[in-house]
Length: 296
Image 1: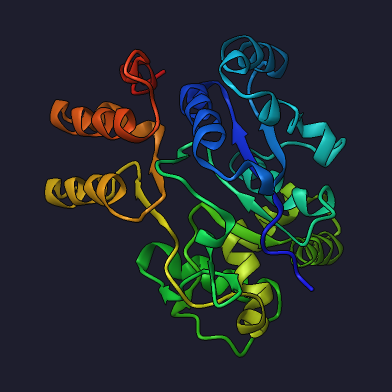
Image 2: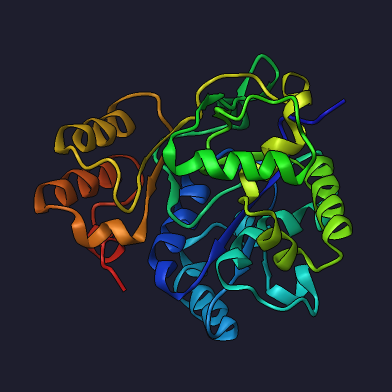
């Protein structure tokens, strides 16, 4: 029986999103059900991973509980992909799929550094009808080509190429399925995982969807993900941005996504709304919300 209440949480951090990664760790410690976290895996994917880890230990560890500190495991490229050559755009995607060979849990929760918790959260908040919640959505012009390429890569000729699972975090992944996809791709393309991903013309989450599509109803429930995200360019409508922040602050949406490249685009009013939301739910009055909003 699949364990839907206890699983590891993974995130990838590099120097540019270090501040948001620190905020994520604080939010996980303060707002997520610690009993259910089997490991908090922080994958270091920066220019100087040793320095990155040292900074995290010096700056963030003192603010965390002993319980979470004991569950943190820092991993590097070589820990997951060995001697595989890096491949630029596909490096982070490969790391997310390589976790399928690292964990022995039934599933894992994949986050990006942009994700943080904004209210008390438990594993059940990611579930619907006893399975991870994941909506099926229409593929827009940006994603349609990736969907078609991914379906072709895994030999799925029956799926509708006009729909997909959202390619955004938080994303609960079934470990065995990820491992199966990894093995399929590296065998088919006779290459390491990063290079295999490049050859597909797809992306990690869309390939995962293509691989499990005919088993979707056994693995997931078609239901919304509990997140609102401000991506690099979307949404642009100020009213939508305001609504997203309000939904995270005032309603039962437990995760906020804030892309680092969105930070310099935020208006002063939007920054004030986000800082107010953080102080209301996550940060103490004396903690500096502006530090997390700086763009490095």
